[in-house]
Image (cartoon, rainbow, N blue to C red; front, side, top):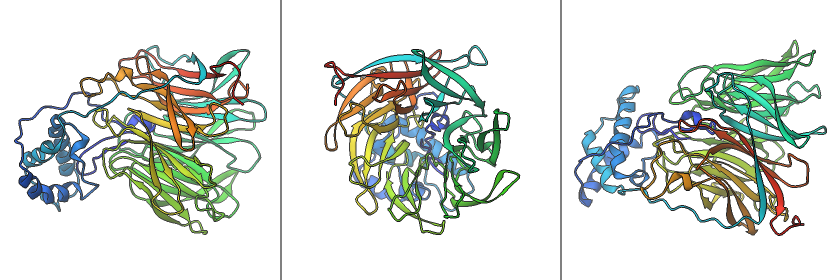
Length: 519
């Protein structure tokens, strides 16, 4: 979910998906260049110009983030963005010199290692399901999977970006079935709530408004509720904004009703972070005042939690695009917020793809599970693609721990997969058709779905469940879908140009490979 663009270079992703709908859709390889190599003295002499030009809008890119032959194209994009912007305060240095500066310091190739896996101590069997699409050649592209356990059933909610459908999937009569709940333009995320306080569960939908990345005002937040006849009704709560990637409800100001924090991802210009403060109810419909909390585009996820333990609700934001930053917005107690940086990647092509709030070390506070695997920026597999644990030590920034290298990682979630009482991790990954590796690694051998077993406190062993030979996944959740007492893995597929269709895959947890399930 990157876009190091604004005024210079570009990399675009959503996440997440927003997820995959924000990438650069040019599938041509980066052109080679015959630009001269610079000496060490020349590199240092030119550095102030490079930093002034690139660092005016974001962190200066690391030359090692791309191979040598990619930098001509990357710099060209950056200069294009600069001249298309309204900025004229930084005289750009000669483009050829900028290319030479990055190229000289870049590696010939990005060295990629295929991560090693060990046999899974838990047996999984996969079952796939799909549903008819409105058009025969249309693909299913699942942007969000949410497991739900209610008094009446265990089921999963699915958002499909291609067909505009929101579906319910459940396991009954020994088979998977899906049913249509509602349609929304391009649903990226769904969250349950009781917005009007009537005791009936309804939902909030974050809608991007378009499948591909664009700067427009078609994004929206809608309230999915059942009307008096039991039929689904979509009520618009926020319209005429950029692409909305996430929305979460919470009573931030302590007045007894639900407010909304909204991640307007946008693209290059249209994004922002909004607070919709509920003011009153008119004819059964909540009314909101809209406040801009942050003017930056690229917000992907906005999970809510009392992060500092002071009794009011805070939230955490992942800003992708050129920002590549995880921020805490701490509630001051009156509904206003103080921003603190949890992690700043420092590389505008870092590829942020998602966050999840979880107490991974079970010490009583809230940590952040963070993934960065966006490759839609440049179609390169990056050595830094990974799952990270950002540990809450009581101050900012959080302490970063590397869990595992996962090329193209899109999502990571935590749960006790092997039933031994600690938290394990599951992760999905997706790489677009035509992605560049290092010439020796084959993207089809990379993992599309895997889990990390916690074998000792904060020590993880990786196990592969599926590779990218057939399909990649962008959406993921854990839940006991068949109600047999263990966690199953639910993964939503994303179809690329090289694949004829996609589907939802359920990896049924059949317990320990030795026979009986672990106690």
